[in-house]
Image (tube, rainbow, N blue to C red):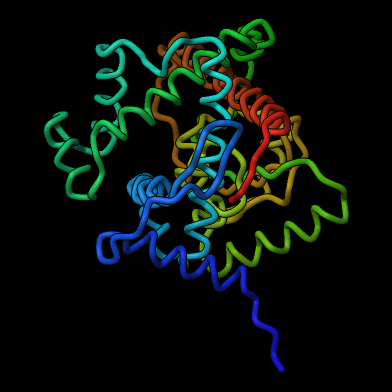
Length: 310
C-alpha cells in the first residue's frame, strides 16, 4: 500500500487556504515563531502578493514553492526586526526620507506620482501602509549595516581610476543566487538542484527558491554594473560567458555565488566624465561590500534566534 505523506498534504491544503483566503474566510493562525515575533497565515498571504509585485515571474511557481519562498523571506525579515529593535525604539524613519525612497521606487517602475503608486498597490490588493513598513525595515537595516561595518569598507580611489582606464567601457546587467557555505559534496548536490530549477522555472524563480541574499525577493536582480567595478576573479569568470549564461558556484566570504549575465551594453560616458565615473564606482563597490557584510551578518544572527514552526 502506498504511503501518504501527511505533512505534504497539510502544507498543500494550507497553501490553498492562504492563497484563496477571501473565498474561504480562514482563521488567521500563527504558523511560525521567530523568538517572540510571529508569522501568520495572513502574513504569508500578504508576502506572496508583495513578492509578486517585486518579481512577476513568481506567479509561475507552484503553491508549495510560493509558500516556502514567502516563509523564508519573512523569517529573514523577522530576524532583522528582532535585531533592529535592540538599537531603536520602533521601526520608523522620517516621513520625508521615506517619501524620497518611495519616489525613487515608483520612478523606476515608470510611474509619475505617489498617487499612481498607491493605485498600483491597490490594484494588486496590497495596503500602502504595509509596503511602507517593508521599505522602512530595509532602510533601517541598511543604515545599521553601514554604521556597524563602515570601518571595514576598503576602497582605493587610485586603483578604481586605473581599473576604469584599463578596462573596456562596458556595463553588465547581472542577477545572482547566493547560497550558504557548505561541504564540497553538499554544494555539488545543491548546484544540481539549482540547475534543475533554472531549467524548469527560470533563473529568477530559482533565485527566489534558493538564494539567501536580499536580492532574492527581486529574482536575484542586481541591476546594471560597470564591468570595471567587479573583482578580478569575477571578471575572469564572466568574460567566459555569453548573455544568458551563468557561472558555476564561486566561493565568497558570504557563501557560494552564481552570477548570470542578463545583458551587456557599452557605457557611453565620455572621458571628461572620469571623476563622475570614479565616484559612481566608489558607490557601487561600497554597496557591494556592504551587501556582502549584510549577508554574512544576517546568517550569523539567524543562528542565534529560535525558530519554531507550529
